View 1 (cartoon, helix red, strand yellow):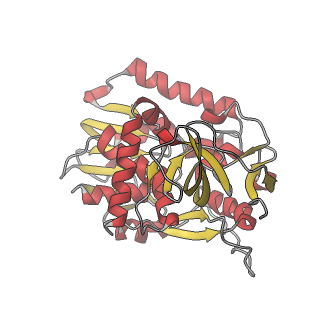
View 2: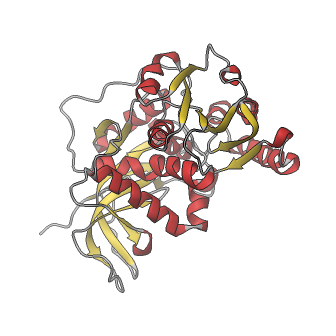
Length: 365
C-alpha cells in the first residue's frame, strides 16, 4: 500500500499571495506524547495574511519556507508513545498558529480538544480561533453582564460576527461598526449597524458604551476609548488598520509598544475608563485549561444547534492563493475553510472583488 501523500501550503517568501506554494512534504510521524492527524478542515484567517507578509509579532522569528495554518480539525491516524487518552479515529481540534494547512500533521496530545460526533469538521474549524477569541473577550476579559451596552468595532468580520452572536445570547444591547454595504449582516445578528465611513460612533450612544471591543486599532484605539462611558472598558484585540498602514514589522512593533506604554503610563485613564489588551495565545499560555474548556463549550453549542457559524467557501489546495486575495479584499460573509479531501474544481474560485480596508480583521493573536 502506497504511503499517504502529504501536501502543505508553504510560504516560499514573505509578501503577496504569489509567494504561496502547494508542495509535497514528508509524512510526519507521531513522537512521544503526540498524535498524528489526517486534517479534515483548516480555517483560513486574516492572521495568515499578516504572517505571510511578516507582520505578525508571534512568528517574527520564522523564515521561509514554512507551512501556514492557524488551526485544524483532524482525525487521529497514529498514536505516539505514552498517549493513552485518545484513540485512533477520534476527531480532535487544535490551534497551532502555523503548520495546519496540510494533509497530515502531528500535535501534542495534551493540547487537543475533542470534537463531538456529528459535527461538520469545517464548521468546527471556524470556531477555533475567531469564536474562541470572541467567547474569551466576552466572558474571560470583559466579564459582560446582561443589559450592558456594547460596541463591536469591525462587526462584519469573523470575530465581530461571533461577538455579536454570543453577545446577543448573553443578553447584551449591541451596536456594530461596518461598511454601509454590510449593515444587513450586522442587523441580522441582532445589533444596530453603524456605518463608520459616514457616522461618528463616539456620538451614537449618549453617555457612552459599557464595553467596546476593538480589533481595528485605528488612531491608537483613542476614538474607541472616547466612545466609552465613565468607568467603561475597552478591550483591544487587534490592529488591522495598522497592518494596512505599516508595510514592515519594525514600525508595527513600535506602534504596539506605544499602545502598551500608553496603557501603562496613563494607567486607569480619565474618568475611570479602562483598557485591556487581549491575545488568545497569551491567554492560552497562562490558562491552557480555559482554552480547552471554552472551545469545548462552543463545540457543544454547535452540536446542539445553538450556534451556526457561517462558511463563505470550502476550498481545495489549488484555491488557497485566490482565497488569500479574497481575505485581503475583505467583505467575506463567513470563513474560508481548506478541506484537503476536496479535489481540484472544474471551475476556479471567483476572483476577489476590489474593496477598501475591511474593519473586521483582527491579527493581534
